[in-house]
Image 1 (cartoon, helix red, strand yellow):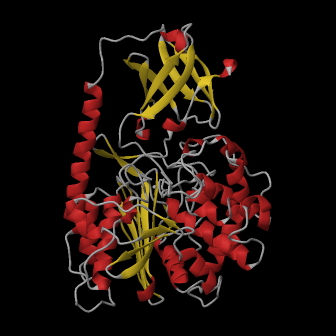
Image 2: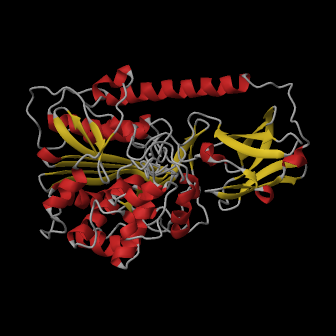
Image 3: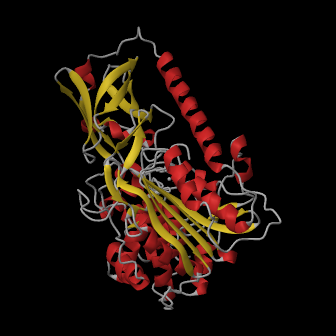
Length: 542
């Protein structure tokens, strides 16, 4: 899930949670890169001898202040440590207990929680959600009746990419229950179970489902049934308090070419999709338990191998695109979404993986079940290139794949992508008809507008300037500057959002505003800013 950059919500960028080009274009879509040609070389059992130097190179190349890295093999922790610093400008180092937002890697915890309830016969994977949450509804009554518990987790509901995320990010004043209530107003983008499209909002429904069936909030259930039994004592199911006095990594991003601290995600509404924060030491325990079909490092079994099969079995086929030439070896032969994970192939092995992205954090989890190998990379900067470079380095070592300079490859691709984005932004500016004027005086555009699923958005005049405020999202406040004709660009006051948007007014014959549509200006805008799904109409006339 996620937000604001190439690799955010995913959560992971919730993607995967703010989820490839723009996060969280997908914290997930870009995570599809992992396939190379194995050599006949013998597979390794120990760590790469140059790993520390390699991680240092990655951090320098992609400007990452701090990294948490966990590697497990055959039920043992080979590495769980930190690199670099928690916050730029502060020498406090990252260690194995330093917590990072794992964003959409949280989704596997939510899926595992549901698996526990299935084992207790309190749920069925393929039973309709309304059996347990009678008030749940989506736009289409048929989908409402047929959508199952499994469907909540595998991104085939018919919703579009990141649809509804504006109810979550930036932090809104909606409660989780209010958000679930508003999902019935989201018009589907495609047919039910027709195609893959990553979403975060149905994982929030899964969180409400867990509470309805267990009597515990999602947060309490995750603590008592997952984190505590695994001994993950340095993890939490929600964002740390403002100021982060604990051992928590700061949040950073490159803005206008410069690495700077950015505000962390503070809302708890999205916790089932991307809220968990953890460190390399605790994530090593999670990897070991997943790879041993629910048996913890201490020998206690939390869930059965049957549940692991459910969690690791692909359900929804994901698109496979052709990567850039520098990454040609990363194209998988298959790729599917499971309840909480992605399964694909790499060098002849099945890979179970996921990425995550939030404001200032991106991460990647990777497991090779037949080798009992697990890797977790946590970062306090929004660079998917960093976690990909490290993950592939470790995989190549253990799988006997010919070494490849992933750092140079990803840097080349990132630089080219930045150039393409800059060119697209210049082209947008060049297309502007600077001689055009708005059809109406500015004050005639000012009004209270409403969207069926988001709610109210106010346009008002302040000191002769038209301003926009999303009434349930305090952070979405900005000024409207004329672009051309009846289209303006809203420039958000919080420049760390990186999500300026076109605002286009359509008029009635009498000159009054009929409707307003929005669209992100830059192709690099995080997909969780789903402005394009809004249809605003004057509230008092509709």
